[in-house]
Image (cartoon, rainbow, N blue to C red; front, side):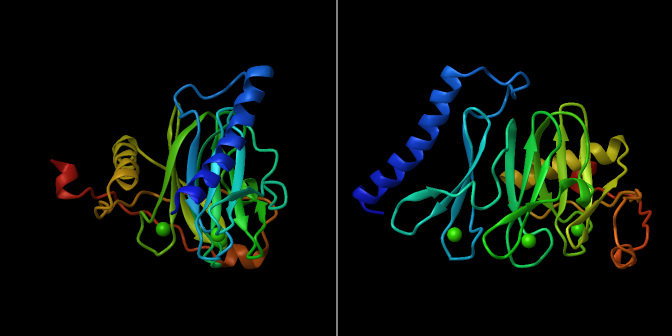
Length: 242
Ligand SMILES: [Ca+2]
Ligand SMILES: [Ca+2]
Ligand SMILES: [Ca+2]
């Protein structure tokens, strides 16, 4: 990247973050703002499939902004037109194509209220579906990770809140179901999440009891596509067992 383009990008990002910092200085602080998340964080992903990495930014005031990479060294704030406006008290964000439609989706953990799952519509916009997707839990989200814990080809979701580890099995079509974790499985899931965030080494194979929770508003065809209930004993790897 040239010096001039790097400067343009820096100015653009600094402007957005600066505005957030100014808002933080002049407005009231969130009452339930996270205490141990970075002041600002970037999650990079090519949400519009143009071959250029875009950035979802959680600002110092814990708002979410999507920055589109223009390809000329600058980034443009497209939060409003992509349907990602109104996100507050965000604590972390992760890109993944959870429904395998070829468009990246965005999961955002929050410090209060519901987590968010924004499904990419394939046209550069998003639709929030966390509740209908089955991703409903209480508490402050601290961090999370996508990984395929049951090796079925669909990325599952681990979320750590301040009080619990939560594992959601991906059923396909943007739907999830919570996995019941015992103490041992919880410790392993946490280790798996931490490993996936810092190390691309193969993950230990671990399967836990999957319990299906009935959800309202699902079509009969969606219910029919769900796999049957599985009750598989968790088997940590030799390394994990030592
Ligand atoms: Ca892009
Ligand atoms: Ca998708
Ligand atoms: Ca899976």
